Amino acid sequence: MLSASQSWPSKAAPHPTEAVTTTGTCVTWASRRIRPSSTPAWATAQFIFDDATRTLIYTINVFGVAPELVTAAHIHQIGAVGVNTDPKYLLLEKGMLNASGKVTIYASDVPALLAGDMYVN
View: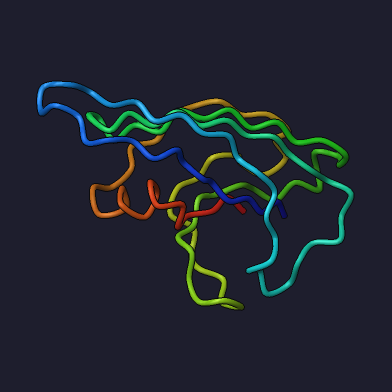
């Protein structure tokens, strides 16, 4: 499995009529998983978040592993250290090495997303 954390640049509050787009790049992060992976697999991911529509546009590329060994990639909300949380948003399906798409983030998850309190696994 792949683990990742997102850190977003801080942004001043926009004028109410302006749409805000936040861009970030995903970095590998496995320290909060209960069973950290020992596979040579790694991934890159890019995200663009549009605050006005709550749309997260993403691209993920997986390297160093055969497709049949890829289980999936999801966005999770960070829980307590040592506690895995349930997937919230599917990004990459079983057997896929590359994916691009978009998901609409629930309004209640936007603060956690922008605070870096969600991760890809």
